[in-house]
Image (cartoon, rainbow, N blue to C red; front, top):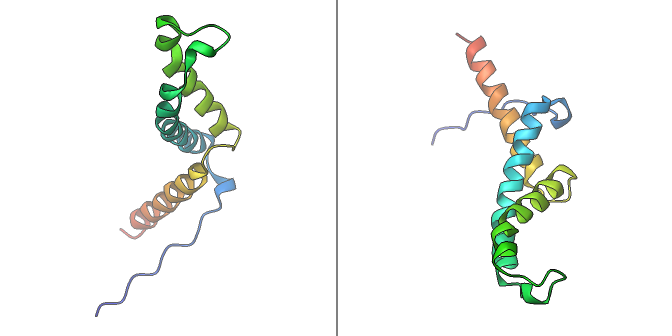
Length: 102
């Protein structure tokens, strides 16, 4: 049986470049929006303040995306942005180690 290679040292998520953090949050927002779409589709919009209708149904996906984006940016999403960011940083560090070893 072959031994597994050791994992590279963990890179602190706080040291992440802003663009990388933003990408992780945008990914979480997309996932959250996909999870929320069925809930909003099942809601009875005829009882809302605006009474529903075709126009409200047409704008609903954008509302869900905006809500999901706001939740992810505020850190109130489903919690995968930090995990995605850590994995991105880990892969970046592993790639940098591979380039330095050439």
